[in-house]
Image (cartoon, rainbow, N blue to C red; front, side):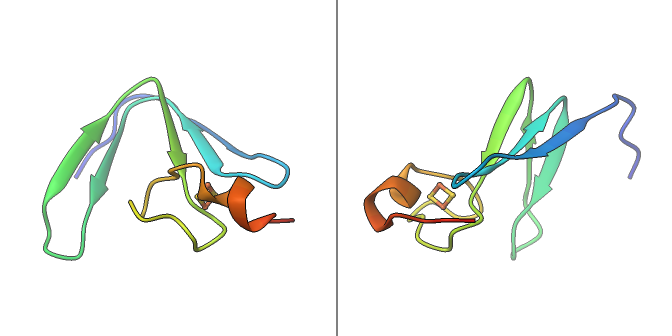
Length: 64
Ligand code: FES
C-alpha cells in the first residue's frame, strides 16, 4: 500500500488525534476507508464510532 500525500499528525490537548492529509483507514475486517483533509481519531477510548472521535471525550472529561 502506498500513501502518496504527506500527512501531519497532531494530538490535541484533551481531545482526538488529528491527522491532516489523505489517509486510508483499515478496519478489523480489512475494509479500507479513504479519508481526506482532516480526520479525528479517538484517543480517549469513549467514542462510539471508533477509531474516529465522536466528541465523547468532552462528556467524560478526558485529560491527556
Ligand atoms: S477523543 Fe474524542 S471521543 Fe475519544
